[in-house]
Image (tube, rainbow, N blue to C red; front, side, top):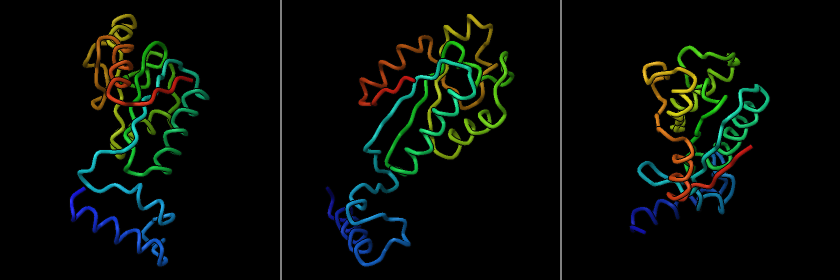
Length: 160
């Protein structure tokens, strides 16, 4: 660890112990979990999203919110959407998508850098083209391959 980075972490640890909670640090132990611009996140998690039920999708998005609250900038999240879940990534969904979920997905992509991957095979089956997908959606021909590769890169995998 570079000397500058070590000094920043020691400063934050000291501030946390001296009432630095105003900095958003939960405890001195939490300071060790802090990340700084340019640091790679310590935690990586990929979600499988393959259903269109509002309750199911809400659970996944709520879990993502909780993880971002717990780990802040020290986590990278990804979502691979296929089957009935693909519609949250379409500009004009062919199945109903709850308005709040649709907006939250955009917010996760824009504000937290959550990666959303659309399965090209599902897109083809449903009749979507690349142009039909939202601008932040990454397209992979095989959604299962994307899940596998995220895991090979060290991501933990969550399927509901």
